[in-house]
Image 1 (tube, rainbow, N blue to C red):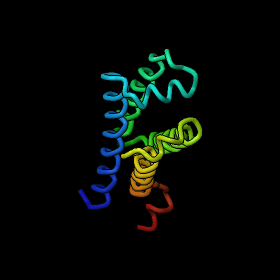
Image 2: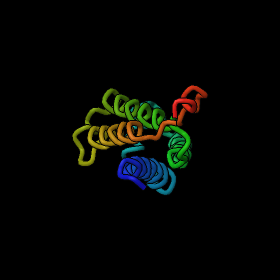
Image 3: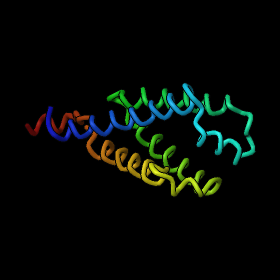
Length: 134
């Protein structure tokens, strides 16, 4: 496997890990205090099912990120990370100064999306004219 391909898979695997971990641990295994704060900020304090549904969605996205032929999950992941960062900035800006906060995590995740996007293999074009020129 060439270096570019290794970088691509390192970025995808890292993103998949981030989404799987954040879907599983603070949402499905144990609802974290940060998740509860955000639910309350949205006026959904008792809607724990919403965090659980988000956790399942994150696990699905993690699995999709590991599918080599699919490029669109990278765009979805970048959009989700940006949207969640904006949501926290608007609804609970005090969380932006916590250790390992959404600014550092989400921007690093978006950078991983960009690395995976840039290093993905594009499908080869097989055009009869190209074959004739060989």
